Amino acid sequence: MTDTERNSTQCTSSVGERRLLTRRRFLAASGVIALSGCLSGEDTGSPDTEVEGPVANAPIPDDPRSFTYARTGSADRPTVTYYGNWKCPYCADFSTGFLGDIITDYVEPGDVNLQFRALAYIDGEPFLGPDAPRAAQAGLAAWNVGPETYWRYHEYVFANQPPESATWATTDKLVSFAEEAGVPETGQLRTKIQEQAYESPIRETSQAAADAGVSGTPALVIDGETVNPLSDEQRTRTLIEQLADGS
Image (cartoon, rainbow, N blue to C red; front, side, top):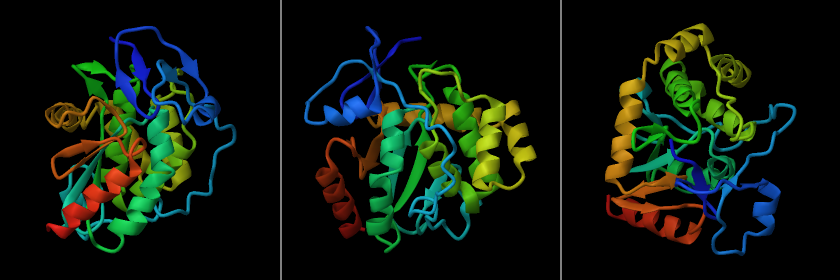
């Protein structure tokens, strides 16, 4: 398995030296064009139970279980695909920050819908740790078991994301996150994780990401174009608006 490397705003798969940077150091160096190494997420300490923002309350389609992957917005609107990884600190930054603006500005008004696909493998190998596929299983289980609470789970996990360098995505930890986020039927969720019930859609996501030219997270695919939303917010907005206008 390859090591992971991060530029200033994205986790990527790369062979090379691993360097650990705290999120605080990243923010202090945000004016730097590129940073080599791998940013280690900080332990958030006590759980953040205040997940009441636009992500936690994101609207879902009328028939959510007809969608394999978690989705927010109206089913008949054009789709933005968010490729992320549950262990990626930059995905935590995006999911607890700019993603909320996208939902408020473009999803809630009905301009677009957005789906989340967890990139747990790159080139057939677990991406960001051997537990990353298990975290992806839990995310899909949360969507399929309780789509009404999925986006609360999404925000809760990213708001309380343990350090990426730790193998934290155990079944017990993921079920605990689901319980704390209010996901129903967590016994069923546990079973789905243990049975690896969503291995096929997780593997399909890896292929779809490769086909779209996605090599790191977070990444948005908007009308066939891939963009890192943290490195170019204005370009992201422009692409979403063009997609909405062309629908």
